[in-house]
Length: 89
Image (cartoon, rainbow, N blue to C red; front, top):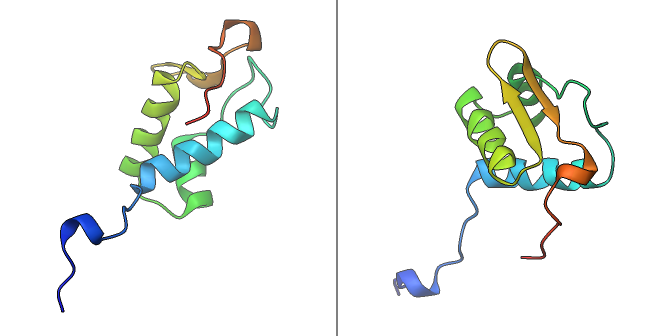
């Protein structure tokens, strides 16, 4: 018997899974504010994901106000006092 779209389990896109894990690590203090954030290639290797997936994950982190990126210089964690409060979703 076929399953209707409403009955199918919702799949979380891979870029959101990566972004969510990095968000938890940032809030836990794994990465120090102002220090270089891991490169796209390092994150792609760590998570075994395509560079485009990692790029989209970093975009989500920027939208969440957790990292800043400067072209040619990389990304870094935003200092705690400049970050928005964590939300529970």
